[in-house]
Structures are given as structure tokens and as C-alpha cells.
Amino acid sequence: MEADTRVEAKLAASERETLLACLDYQRDTVLQKIAGADEEALRRRAVPSLTTLLGVVKHLAYVERWWFRLVFAGEEGPDPWPEDDPDIDFRIEPEETTEQVVALFRDEVARARVIIAAADLDDRGRGTTRTSRGSTGADFSLRWIVVHVIEETARHLGHMDIIREQVDGTVGY
Image (cartoon, rainbow, N blue to C red; front, side, top):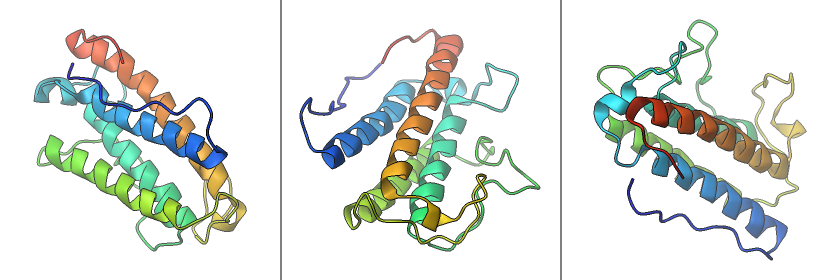
């Protein structure tokens, strides 16, 4: 694996600083998990589902888009999990490159950072899109969304740990 450049959260900081540092640490770990893996390893299915290392990165880009842009900021956009193709976010199409998927993830993270910077943790979402909870953006505070995205990212990092070890034997981070 490549050098670890992640920055851990300070042990004593404000709530906002702590949450955002923890979120960024998880985001950076996503990219750390795929560092040094070859194309075949990034696309190899090691479990019965469509889950691959690169597929998880794509999925987490969609998670960032969904929660920060569509639910919280109220931007318009397609449902990342359409009923007719609910696995689209995990599937890597043959024409999609690793660079494109990583750029998508980085772009969604950058957009989310701008949205977060302009809001207070107590602010409520403006999205009208219904979530799986049957709620709209107005039902979610930015604080809840940040904590949820930390949780979602960390959960998928566990999947990435297992997949990475299965596809090329790399352990750690």
C-alpha cells in the first residue's frame, strides 16, 4: 500500500470539527483501500453480489450525492437507486475507468464540503425527494446526515477490508 496520508481527528475539538474530521478520515480511507491495487483487483468480485472495490467507491460517491446534494441541499437530480436498476451504483461498466470512478467520488466529496461549509449542523435539509425512511430532506438535520454518512462509509470500509484481502492479499488500514 501507498503511504498513509490520512489525518486523524483532534482528540479535543468542537463538535463540528470532530464530525467533519471523522468524515474526512473515512473518505480518505476509501481511497487508501484501493491504493496500489491493479485494475483486475479493483474490479474482481470476491462475494456473490456485484460488490467490488471500485463498485464500493462508486456507491459511496452516490451516497455523498444523495445525502448532501439531493436530500440536504435540495438539488434536483436522478435517483441514484432507480427501481428498475437498483444495483447501478455498485456496477462498474466496462467503459468506466478507475480514474473516472475516483474522480466521481472526489467530485461528490468536494461538492459536499461546499454544502456543509455553508450550513449549520442544526440546519434542516431542503430536498423534497422521499427517502427510504419515507421522509424528505426537511426531516433531517445536517448533523444527522454527517453522522449517517460517517456510519455508511465506515460500514463499507469493512467490506473493502475483506474484499481487498480476498482479491490480492493486502491487509491493513
